Image 1 (tube, one colour):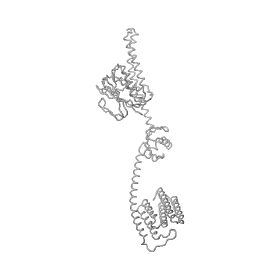
Image 2 (image 1 turned 90 degrees about the vertical axis):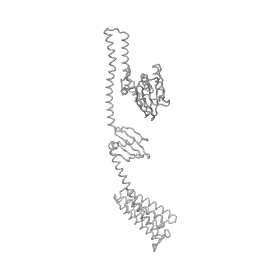
Image 3 (image 1 turned 120 degrees about the vertical axis):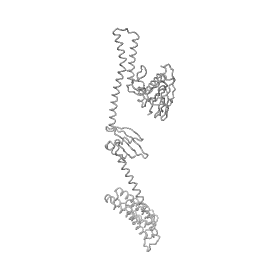
Image 4 (image 1 turned 180 degrees about the vertical axis):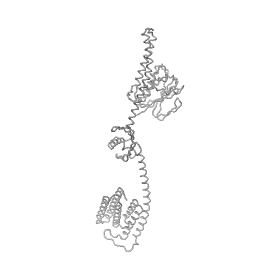
Length: 506
């Protein structure tokens, strides 16, 4: 049995070959001046094509009868046209091999033997005619042992060999086709178990494959909108899109032929949980911050209250020492509040193209002046390192780091190192750092930090300095994160500290 699709392909190919034969016959007959036969052959070709169309429309699905009717009709057409163009010596006779190939592929060995017998019968008929004058008359030859019969024997050998070879190749092809279908079905079953939506889209925008999850995540209307949005991307991309109240994260891979593979997930619940987690973290952070802030404020407030009670009770005179103590506590209280407000305020960046080396030098010069200029900066950041950033915030960042280095009693020098992506350097704690992005390292040669101090170095209100507020490194890290970067600290007691600033150019 033939499927409807196989029958359509076969009848279409059959009609095309008949047209080709007609064209060859037309050119031959035109050359020998046999004009009366030209119209006949064109009529035969048209008739054959109409018969093929009728066979496709009339016969039911999976019927083999139209296949054989079309083949026999093809054999008759080839026979007639061979007689008109040279008999068994005509080049058109080679077209008898095509039906054999078709039948062996679709019907196997048994069909191939039957078709070979039909083709040989038609060739034998050709041997019974001797080509005389084109278009005039033919007459029977009394003996078959002629030159034509030799052709017949050669064709018999060719058809027999062709049947065997075609059968082998057909079986090989069908086995590979079965393996491919099995692999495709297996692949589709695997892809249908994936919770993410997977789409394959042709360069013309036609959906070639959609797994089960695609239909579960999106309805037809949403899928159409999603494809309209995603197909505007002309390069491989990872992004998100909000569609009908759903947040979809997707990635697009474009193959060499323009076919797109799209993988997407419904991130709506994930985003909702993420927002809830952030809210819980924010509340927890505010609780911890409030407790630390209350602790930092309580001490200077208590000292001020005690001093004022003593003055108001007139037990002591408000001498200079007492007033200085009150003023110190008031200034400390003011500094804690100001630093807290500076940290808590969401950074509003004013982005411009910033030459980092100039910002580093300016920040160091300002801080060095406060410490009598007894320190030397060895700035290895190249002038061509320019990034989009807030220049004021960067200067604040480096000022805090240089202040920490000086107060950590660095030995005269402070170094700023620069690393390109994939470059590496040995740090003060003897570990090797490999840069993933452009990085600047601020290195001092001071006291360094032990492991416990290093763990808490970026905590709010944590400071090992007398009178320190514990905001410096926390503010530095906040500035780096606002720029999409990262801040890392490596330190070793007695050797110094490396503060790594990882920048993202994008």
